Length: 144
Image (cartoon, rainbow, N blue to C red):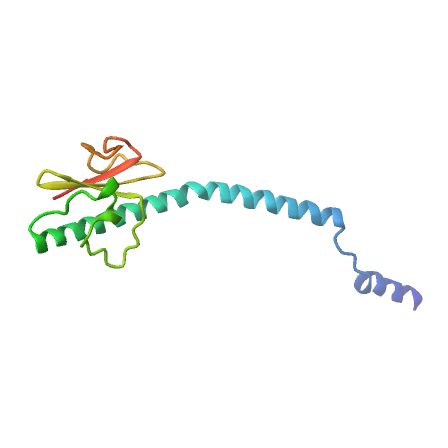
């Protein structure tokens, strides 16, 4: 009987857990994997932010076209060529910060923004203030 009790004790009652060293090794490995994943997602995060800026730029273009329909001309150059300085421009629900630029160009306009990842798309002739539309990190759109 004593033999069967010690066998039961060994099998079911006496459970050993992980040692502190084993736990620290596992936590360390998880930490390293998590940091590698986060570093890898940084580029995707910047690309997503750039896509949002390009979408906002298209919304600004739509707002400028509506301004033209209401007033018969595009707005004059604001101070510092910043879109936020354009008086009377209906921005709708857009939150526009100081990273969007505007320049009246003859009978049309140029608008642009700086991208983190860069793009070969967009209009690539002209400048808005100190920003060159031919630069891969400055994305421009022209009036239609």
